[in-house]
Image 1 (tube, rainbow, N blue to C red):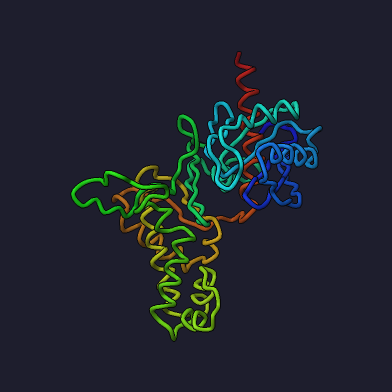
Image 2: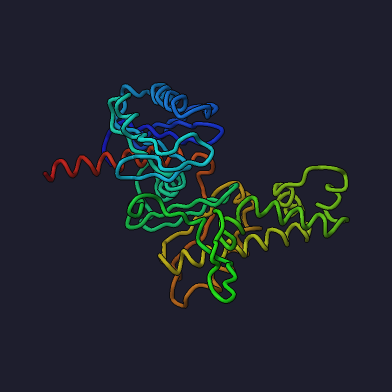
Length: 326
């Protein structure tokens, strides 16, 4: 890995986290609330955060975003919960900082972090699914992030349960589409399953909380399942089996070394992972995935910012190599 000081920013709808990768060690900075009042305000905040992470002494920077990013130009095409749409973010930040800047999808950053150890890639082929409010994902293929022609692969929008009937629907509707992994297996889906269970079984762990006037969320299902409630465990089993179809698709397509499950829902651990892997194995082509490990992410909420700093180091090194070859 190229020597230097590499800054990573993980920008979410509520907070911005920063980290520095130097000599194989990460230094983490306290997150700050995201200024979403306008694109200009957010860009000013990013410049300030780069400075607070020691921007003047940095080698390169990567900003990870929940966005569709044109990797070649660093232009943000579309963002979730951020005021960035058709914004040339790489150019703007490069001009302000005088440093090489890369802009990457946040789930792709997390995937690279999970494939790496101290900034060095140790797993050449990895698929990551991040199960939060929605479903994100990233692909590491042959030791590098796969970005497609323009942006990261939107794993959450693969279809796992679409009823085609007499043919594909003429109007697929808005994203996330019916039958997609995000519609069926994200945090919102867990909440729907949780509320349905609470209403169906009023004497259960969830039903009693609902009767007491408490707000019921997916966290309640995880808590109840951990305590052994059979209805909560059923909720997580259903979600896990849906996720398992997405995992099977990933294995059938890429036969990776690892499939990693991250995001808030992954806190359910084996209660989610066991039915997910069992379903995935049942729907994987015979002979595929025999050496694929399915596991929970190990870096937790720091994966995005660690991956962003790793992207900066990896891409700076790639650019330096190209310059030498010229």
